[in-house]
Length: 225
Image 1 (cartoon, one colour):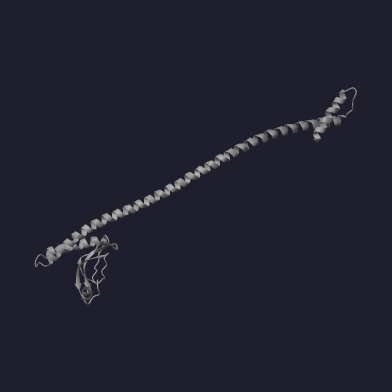
Image 2 (cartoon, helix red, strand yellow):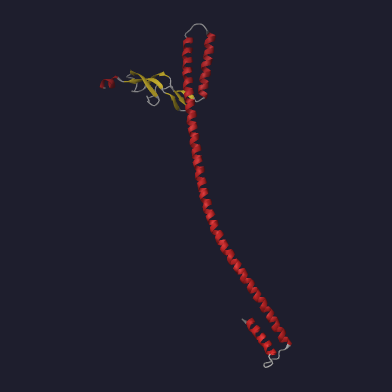
């Protein structure tokens, strides 16, 4: 380095001044310059030492940061696993909740259907009693009161979604009807419902109670059979 050369020349010059056998004359100006150069050199050496120390610290910090980075990556991987497990658990819980709601809804409808079937039986009993009362000559007030009860019952069933089938004239459907009687009839297509013997009902377009019906059959088919 340039400063080292100056430094060596400076101290060689001083030794030569002290050496009586090799004395060199140096001006004051040059002497001050040499001192200034020596001081700057010492300052630079200190700065280099400081930089080396800082460099060592930075290298340690880099190693620690790398370790922290590895730990952070491991933590991120664990967090991702926990997050995926949480998402799966939430999905399972939502599926369970929906399944439970469907099961509760089916149970509620089943209970409702059973209750409505019992109410329909009571309604039909009341309807038969009303028809008997209508055949009597007296007791108009009783007839009117009974008729009002039947109408209120009908209104209650209608509000719950129950409505009668009225299948006369329809083609027999084993999913909706029950064939109680068969009647020969040449004027109607086979399996046409002639009469509803036992009344059938829907519950919101679902079959609540199948209708017992009388259906038509032609003589020709019966003879062939």
